[in-house]
Length: 459
Image (cartoon, rainbow, N blue to C red):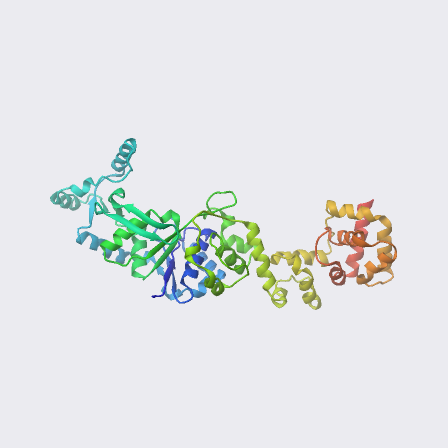
């Protein structure tokens, strides 16, 4: 069995969103461990593409870990392959499989309107295919603008097995003679796309279901040019939390945006691998491990829905796998050097993003008073002024902060009331790291200041 060759072919007209990132990931997983994963930049639409977005796509793929499987010296850019497309277009013409179409946009629009009015599909009638050769030559000689259309063979049926959607059957007559090159000479997107797949030796194309209408056309073209036809699999759309398809316009759905929010690449990869695909593994896995349990045959046919809570689940697992030594490098400068390891151990159960370390550093070491929330204020009221008198008195007697709970218990204040009140006074919340860890980390002068501030809440 020949190794699988897949590809990812983004158009650099915007930042990489999660739907496209999933396509890239599925394509890589389908190729591993023995196949090849190719990258092609489809940058022929000069009005929309930008080198900025090309660089951003490459950076996102590298950050996700997919870039390690790409031969960066063999990345095809369609803008540099125009001569190749022109050669294949010339072949079609020489074989008599394409012809010039002189119809104006207005004429074509009128023709489509008439067909719709009769309840017929709006396909091209083929009238320019019936022009006498002498007229065609004369009009071309006069420089009349002409697109080039492929002669769709009549009476044929295009059959293929979509790896996701199953067997597909399309009567060729329903397609009409379609345009393969504009009057400017620029090849149509789906033409260049099919030529590149064939010449690169791609054996499996995974792409969004919005490309499905192009597939029978591409199969007809490749067969006509006697080029190899890959297998195709069309992935259902990924819907955002609002229920509309993800797109490059939804910044919150871009890989760059999630990266800025602090999500880890391993979390995103594990989430995407299961977004619309059944994987017999509930554990966090790297790319090679995911490839071992991934199958194109287990991709669902229904739209997948972006679920931020599921993404946060994988973020927790990815963060939990990181060693303390790595997380120490994330800490802000206000965490003392001698306390950095203990700080990480104390707060990591309450951390999801790098910015959370900065939050807890400000709570533990910051000079600014904390904001007392409603529930925290109620916990302070529940213990009253005597609680704070005892705690402040103990600190004045140079009692180590870690012994404060013992002094308060000895005074008859214990259980949840004690720890809720301490946590509320010192952090402004009823949730967070273990109090024994906070008391050891927090400087005594800050503890005293926070307790005195809390007394003010009671007044």
